Length: 212
Image (cartoon, rainbow, N blue to C red; front, side, top):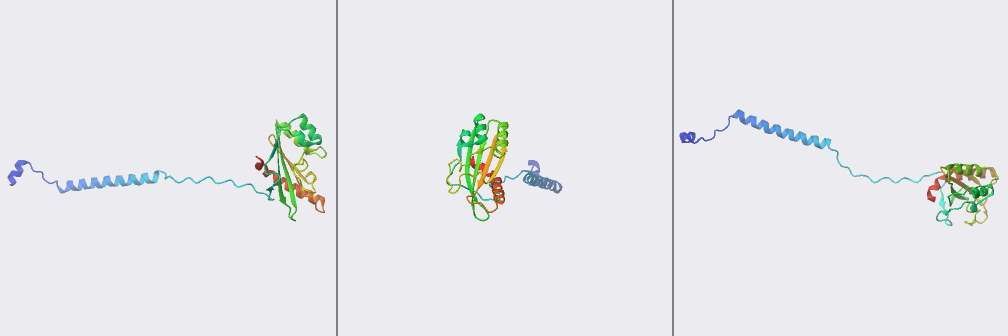
C-alpha cells in the first residue's frame, strides 16, 4: 500500500515549521485588520444630531412695557409734516420724510403710576436730513413730531400730550427715533418726575423692534 501511494503521488503533510509560519501569517493579517478598524473608528468623525438654534431672548431693561390696547399695531404714514408742529413741521414740509411709524406702550413707575410712552420712528431720505431733524427736535421751543396722545390717535383722560414728561432721541442711519413718556399725575418734585420720565424714554429704545 505504501508503494502504491508513492507511485500515485499522495500529498505529504507539511512540516511543523511550515504550519507555524502559516498560522503566524494568518494571525498577523487578523491583527492588521483589527488595528485598521480601530483607526477608522477613532479618525472618522461621528455624526451627532444637530441641535435646533437657540431663540434669541428679547432685550430686557429697567422697565416692563406693554403695548397699549388702543394701538395694537404700529401706525404708519408716508407723510410726516401733518403729524408735526412748530419749526419741525416747517422742516418736514420742506424736507419730506419717507415714512413715519409710531406705537404706544405703557409701564409703571415704582409708586404704581401708569406711564404712557410714545415711540416714533421718522425715516428720512438721507442720513444728513435725519441728523438735521434730530438737531432741530432736540432744541427747546422748536416743536416736534406729535406723540400719539397729542395727535388724537389715543385718548388718555387727563393727558393732552406726552411732551411735558421725558424726551429722548437717537439716530439710526436714516431713522430718527423720538420717544416721549409721561403720566397723568406728576409727582411733587417736577425735576425728579422729568428725570424719571427720561429714564423711561431712554429704556424704551428697545421697543423699536416691535414696530417692524
